[in-house]
Length: 322
Image 1 (tube, rainbow, N blue to C red):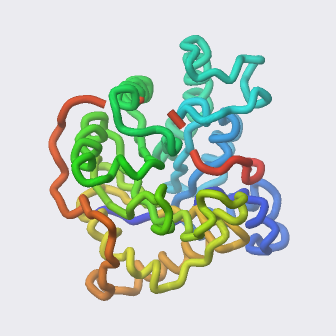
Image 2: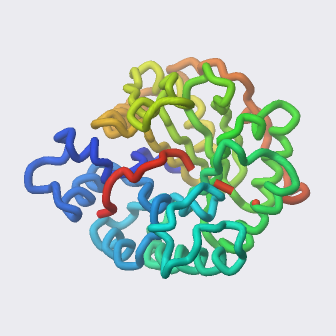
Image 3: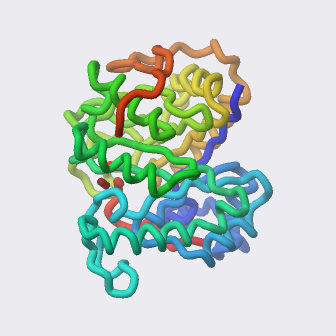
C-alpha cells in the first residue's frame, strides 16, 4: 500500500491568512509555513503559476519544513500555454509561448527556481495543468512530448481541463500517452453539472504517484469570479465517498497526493483535516463508491503505446509565497 498524503493548494492564500487559521505569532512567511507543515505532509505551490519560482524561496521552503515534507509545484503559466502577463516575464522577455528562444529561457529559469527543492528531495511533483482549450490531437501530443523531454527525471503530474481527454474511446489513448511519458494523471473532483465538467475518473499512469485535486463543486465554476468558483465547503459524506478510490490508487502507486483547491477562507484546510481523519479512522470498505460518468480506473493500466505537448486555473495570485 502506497503512502497517502493530504494537503491544500497553497498555504499563502489571502483568504486563508485572513481566516484566523494561522495563530498569533505565526502569521509571517516563516511562521505560516512551519505551522502548515506541522499539520500536513504536502502542499501545492500555486504562486509558481503566476510568476517564476525563485531559488531563494525554494531554499527557504526546504529549510523551514521537516524531513519528508514535499512541495507539488504548479508549472508557470507560459509553460502550459496560458496567457501570461508581460510584467512577470524575466528581463523584459515577451510573453510568447510560441517563441522557441523565449521558451528556452523560461524553462531554464523555472528549472533553476525549483532546483533547491529537487536537491533537498522535497519536490513531490511538477503539476502541468492545461487550459480548457487544450484538447486531444497531434499538436497536444507533440506539446506533451516536448514537456517530457525538457523535464526528464522530474516527477510530473498532468491535469486536463477539457473533458474529452477522459471520454470513452479517448480515455485509453490518454492513459497510454501519459504512461509513455511517465506522467501521473490528476483526478479531479468538481461539479458535474456543466458541459466543461471533467469526470471524476482515477486512472493510474505512473507507478510512483497519483494526484487527486478537489476543486469544490460550485456551479459558478465556468462563469463566476475566483471567489465564486472556489467557494465550496465539502460535506463529510462527499469526502467519504472518495475513500475507496483513494485507497485503490494507493494500492497501485507509491504515493497519492490528495490536494484541496477550494481555497476560500479556511475551507481547504478544514476539508484536508477531515479527509485525513477519515482516511485514518474508516476501514477501506466502510463507504460506498459514488457514481461517476465513466471509470477507467477500473481497468488495468495500459502498457506503453504511441506518442504524446499548453496551459491552469485561477486568474489571480493567491498571495505571496512564503
